[in-house]
Amino acid sequence: MAFAAGKKTWGICDISGFRYRLKDMKKTWDGFLVGPDQWSPKQPQLEAPRVGPDPQAIRDPRPDRTEPVAEALLTNNPFLSTSGSAVIKVFECDHGRSTGDKVRFRGAEPFDGFTIATLIDPDAYTITKVDADTYTFTAVTGTGTSGARGGGVFVSVGPAQTLLSLNPFRTEASGANAVIKVTEFKHNRTTGDTVCLRKTEAFDGITTTVLESASGYTITVVDANEYKFTSTGTATTGDITGGGSIATAGPV
Image (cartoon, rainbow, N blue to C red; front, side, top):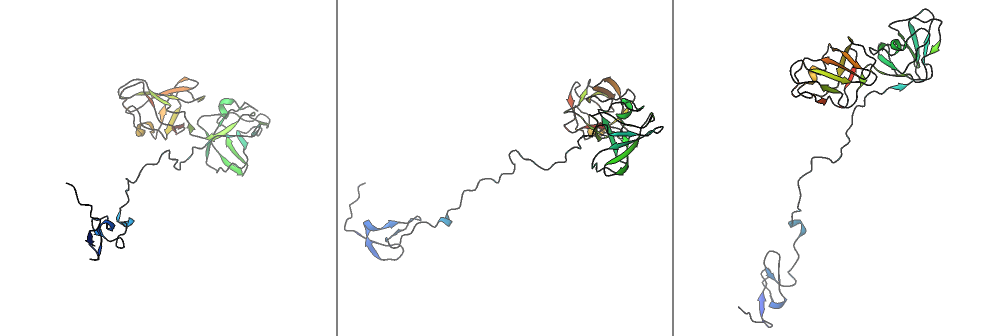
């Protein structure tokens, strides 16, 4: 339907009641037809902002974490023996250790009557602090021949519990009393040793309670880098690796 041009038509403002030329009147955002002096844009606060959902997750988070204790490389020939004694003094600058701490040595060479197996005993040694830079331990076997410095240039010291590689455990087969193989590089352990596992993750039906038995497990050595034990758990599938990224092995 066609409308008249209305060039000379008057209109009454819906707000003020004044008369204006109809062609000059404007329509407000809420539908009123008003004079040009009565018109105003819509107040922005009347338009609620579009708010999306509050994000909960963070992309690539980096939370605080407790770093595993690392091994420390000692000075050249860090051991000092005494003739006729099994007590060995260790030189470790600013060691921060206390009497009663347990440490394990690696990379040692034989010296003054003490063998490699004695020095890097996987059961670790309980130390006695002497001062900020030295402490002593009593070797499990052997005594000093003449009293000397020794041990070599690649001796390191670390926690009694050894940090294992990623997912170091593997079940050999499914079923109860599962046999679990452990990968520990250059473990220096012997068949019949007791090993205690810590900071593990459950896998293949084997729970952390089973893996971290307080009494530990008697092991059978497979080779220089592997050993196995019979657990009290039941493996679901068998031939599955697991255990997590911070599992450790050490003495009871």
